[in-house]
Amino acid sequence: MLKLYYAPATCALASHIALAEAGAPYTTEKVDFKTNQQNSPEYLKINPKGRVPTLVTDRGILTETPAMLAYIAQTFPQAKLAPLDDAFEFAKLQAFNSYLCSTVHVAHAHKMRGARWAADETSFADMKKMVPKTMGACFSLIERDMLRGPWVMGEGYTVGDAYLYTLTLWLDGDGVDIATLPKVKAHRERMEQRPAVQKVLAEQKV
View 1 (tube, rainbow, N blue to C red):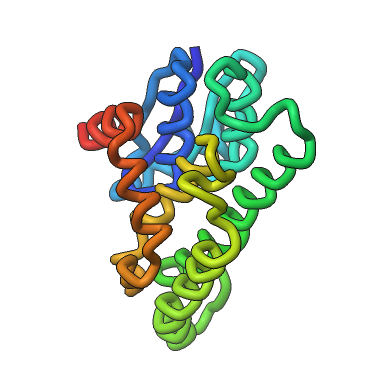
View 2 (view 1 turned 135 degrees about the vertical axis):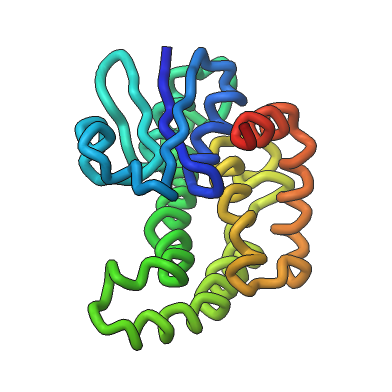
């Protein structure tokens, strides 16, 4: 049995969706960011990074969304959540997920986590002002060059779709009009029709 530690409205949603899509046996535990539970001694023993998601497996603990998504896809190959039989296509999927993790997520985080990169509070405001521009640029690139078809990889649904969907939910709050991104908007709408996505969204509201 897998156990996912998550917080609502975070990137943990991607791994949660992937688990549901895979038909994996799993439980979840909500980490309360409002009470700073992610930095509690108990949670730091599980994930010393003090972040979510965290996935507890029978072989140990995994962190970082791209790694967790790859693990889920490879552990439940019957769900066909990644092109596991094609090394190049799998690498392309990993490249997409890595871009979301290392570039898009970081651009979003400048809105409310400026203290990670600067000490002067006046710098925080500058970072926040840049978020609509940087997130807009990231998603313009995804719209133009990276979203290959109805799904990230083209015709086949993958864990990359769960990850992209998760980050598109941040666009309104980041000052990016999704209507200017018709392919991304259609992808988000398509995702919200999937039973696994509806299931997970309901679970995270509890």
